[in-house]
Image 1 (cartoon, helix red, strand yellow):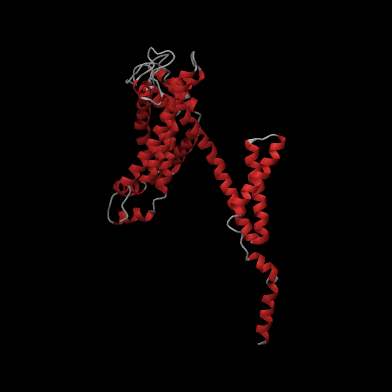
Image 2 (spheres, rainbow, N blue to C red):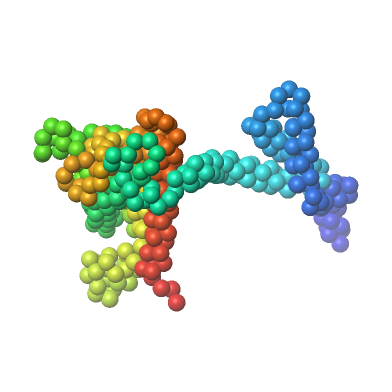
Length: 361
């Protein structure tokens, strides 16, 4: 009995006083966050109005003042743990907003500027014989699809097979060497890929060779390491138990890879391929060097120059004619079309992943 009383007194001595316990168990009202944000905005806005208003300073000042005020109030009312939780929540939310603001700004700018020429003429006419207003980017759209299509046809099989070799078969120096060179290729500048394609086709065809297929080769140099790395990571997360179960049933290794490993990771592989295509479809430097520019439509990637959307947008914006407005409008619309193409590819990848993913029910 004496021991219990002593232990009880020891526990009571470790508890905070009643006033502290009441403060820790408190909670800020629901209007504290929006009210504190509005008050911080009013204080910062009033202060900047006296010295000169700036949107950037207003946003940063409001967030900093709100964070400090919320942390202090939560520390007094709710305790240190809840205050720290609120502080981290505000910091994470602010970082998210900081990352989203440029994205929203880019989308708004491209859509508002590009919608002006987003008409039937832009998608059905080329720039052959057009000076000033009128014309379109039909030749550039088709050139982009053709060149990117050839690049995908070359890159996807090579990337997939390389990743399968590294994960399922590769061991020793060869596998380490391939991994090293894939890592190196991931970081090479795009202009280097363009110069490589120019040098290759100068050697094969002759000086001054500008072909759409040369642009496909340049893009494939940039695309292959992305496909390899994305596919490799997806194959690695497939549980080994699935492979062992197939081997236990007497299934050969190649069939296990084809029927078990790849279908299990098809969603991630499709996303990786989409990211690789989106990575190269907007490249300007290699296409400008290896393919050049033309105002006419050219469906043959192996004969003559081919127009592409990135180069079309770049030259329309960088070297506009007189008057400037029609060229700038076409440049913004070309950028908008590029964004739409990437979005469609992303949706297509999601559809492929949903159709071919293994059924769990």
